[in-house]
Length: 209
Image (cartoon, rainbow, N blue to C red; front, side, top):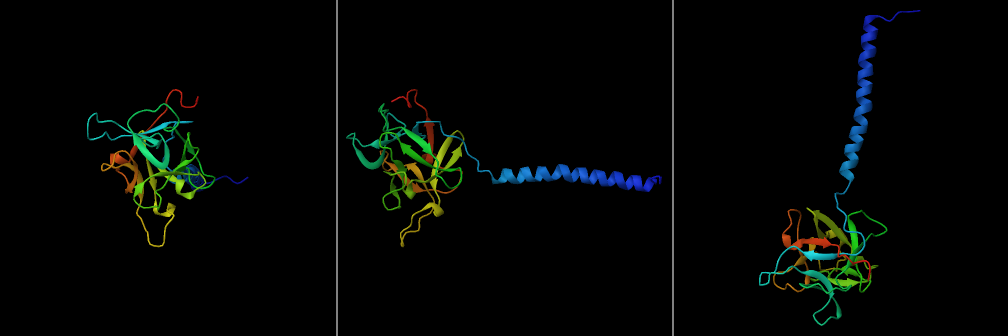
C-alpha cells in the first residue's frame, strides 16, 4: 500500500477547503440573487378595509379623507370621491384582489358596495379616478410600501394609451385644488409626496355587513 506523501496530504487538504468554500458560497450567492428578485411589499389588511389619505385638509377642521364611491348626494356617479366622514356603510370599503398573471405588487381594489374596482381616469389622463368592472385593464395598480402605508401607482407599461397620449407614471392622490375627488396625478419614484400616500384601516365590522 502506497503511503501519502506530505505534499499530497497538503494538496488534498487545500482542495478540500476550496471545495467546502465553493459548496457554502454557491447557496449564499443563490439566496442573495433570489432576494434581489423579490418585490418588496407589505400586505394590505385581509378582507375589507378603508383607504384614508395621510394629508390633512388645509382648512378647519383639517380633516383626513376616505376613498368613497358615493358622491355628496349619496349616489354612485362612477367617480371616486374623498369624504372626511365615515359613512358606516360599504361605499368606503375596499379589498385587495390579485390578477391571475403578473407580479405580486400589482393588484386591484374592489369596492364592497358596487362590486367594481378602482380604475384609471376616463381617458387615462390627469383627472379623477373612476370605478369600473374588475375585468377592465385600467383597474390594475402597483402598490408601493411607504412605511406602514401605501402608494398606488400606474407605470408606463400599465397604461392603455390613445395614439396621442403618452403619460408619465401617475399615482392616486389627494389634489389640493379639489380635496373632494380622488385624483390621478403625475408622480415619480420614492421619496413620494405625502399626497400620494394612503393608510389602510380595518374597521371592526368591515366584513360583517
